[in-house]
Image (cartoon, rainbow, N blue to C red; front, side, top):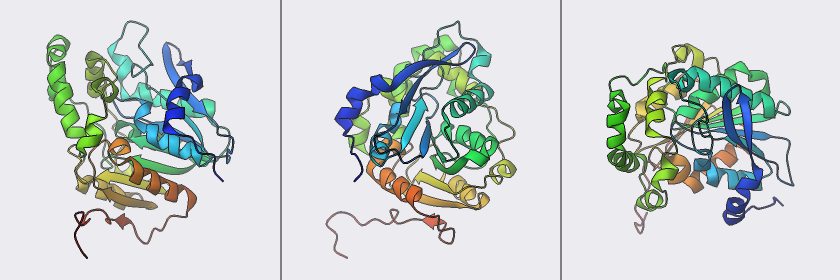
Length: 306
């Protein structure tokens, strides 16, 4: 029987499995690594989204540790507990720099060729790059709320184009609007504090958004993915159009798409369903003949008789 790890126990235990690591020169990140007693030789690498923290995957980590998977993840540089301990410079927050960090994390903690990458939002692009660069060691890929197979472009004409001093003045409003947009479930939205939702200084987040340039991440690059891929998207995601995710499903030959009744923060918004689908994907072969799952789109209201 799998050894079950309760959420309460894992909360208490998180700090014991965290370690401050110099992943690269001048790049210190807090890494979470844990192997369960019933370790099944497969390691799951989690990559969170911009502005977030690895604890956005808390439910998935709890559940999958209980299934015997080793878990490795980290708070990205300048996120969460991975505080920027040097004078921040713009180049530190580019997608290229975060890619180097992602590859270093994988190379340092990879034990064999039984590895699965799980990413959310911005983290899905990091997963895609690691998957293609280390494809002989990646068995499967899980992408949540990642969007279409398109090159990343800096947000130079959005709210993040404002001067850092002015952006700081708008921080309370930004947090309120962002939180409203991220969740579909009012209950899940109220369970997350603002500091948990955005774990990065607003000035640094501005640089992350302005530095998300990845010209190579187009359809041709995503079509190179050769392992089975699970795509998850929320029907009520205000950042990711369903059409983009469906295009990704078509471009990646060995992919299957699940559309859930949630918003952008699927790991929290639809935690139980995400856990169930990921577990099934990890333990079963991919049915490429059924590439799109829409079983939750037409869910009947509670109490309605079939």
